[in-house]
Image (cartoon, rainbow, N blue to C red):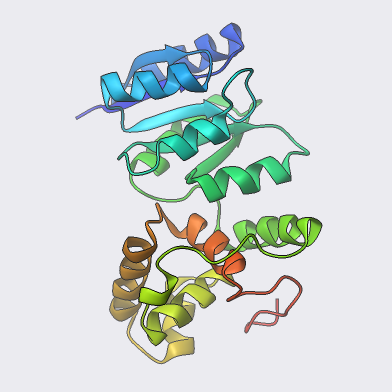
Length: 223
């Protein structure tokens, strides 16, 4: 079964080039193109793609707002960005983006990124996500507030969320909590479901904004 894709970018040449590259893959199909966030949302509603490749900055409705409005829909968002936009990346993660690519990405990296995101994985490694979010939180001051549903987490789930926020992998979380990796996976799934999060990357945002992780405080691993 092909990965169904919508490509959204206000630059026609960029949009067309990305669409051509992805549509040429035997396991991918570009079902629509869009020039702004509103068109991207309409395309998702009409075509039900697996992945939305979305520019983070566009006139009218930008990629962040479009991602926010797609909350609850099964599409995975792969955001296009450029250097020096950490604050925008943070906002996009909070909105539910599953990964990021620089606009000058190579062909092979673009194709692999779509496959990774379509498979339900985050494109940013947890440690990279953690450093990016910590930098953004420090620059903005206090956390934005408690995420809805945090009080529904069990003590073990809260601990799991805290360790996710520190950038720990499942094996490291299992060692820290002295439980099996299978138990950790169960806790992670429950945390994502209760907080309405798309993936682990968004869980890192929730950990910081809920106050479970404080910017500047050393992680358990000492990194």
